[in-house]
Length: 181
View 1 (cartoon, rainbow, N blue to C red):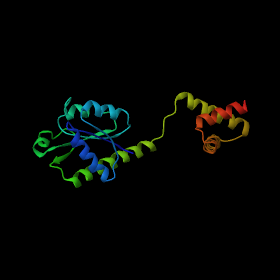
View 2: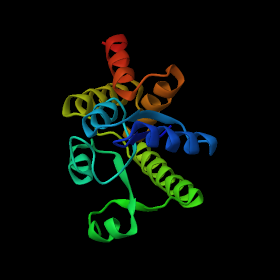
View 3: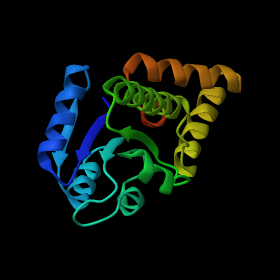
View 4: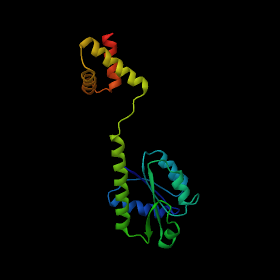
C-alpha cells in the first residue's frame, strides 16, 4: 500500500487532513510538523506521497522534495497566489481553500501512478550475475552431455524444476550439479 505522510507546521491542520483522507479510504502513515520528521518517516517506506505546505518550521517544500527518497512524490497545498510563485517546481499542487473532492481526486491519481510504477518494476526481470549465469550454463551443459538434451530442453528442464521446487534457477542449477557430479 502507498504510504501517505502529512507534514504541516500546525499539527491540528495535519490531523484534519488525515481525517479527510482516512474517511475517503486512504491509509495515512504519519502526521508530523517538520520536514525532518517527514523525511525520517519516508526513509522507512519504499514509496509514497508527502502532503505539505510551502513552509515548514525547518525547511521549505522544495528542500523537502529534494530530501525525499526515490519513489516519493510531493503534493503541495497552498493558496492560489503562492502556488503561482511555485509554478515549475515539478510538484503537484492543490489550491487552498481546500475543496475536498479536488484533494481526494489528486491523491487518488498519485496513488494510481505510484502503483502503476510498482507493477511495471515487478515485470522487469532481475539481472543474473556472471557467476549465476555460469552456474546455469554449467548445469545445462551437464544435462546436455549426460541426458542428450538440446540446450533449449536443458534450459526448460532447469526452469520447470525451479518452478516445481519453488527455488530460483541458480539454486536449481546448483542442486543439479551437486546431484550429477
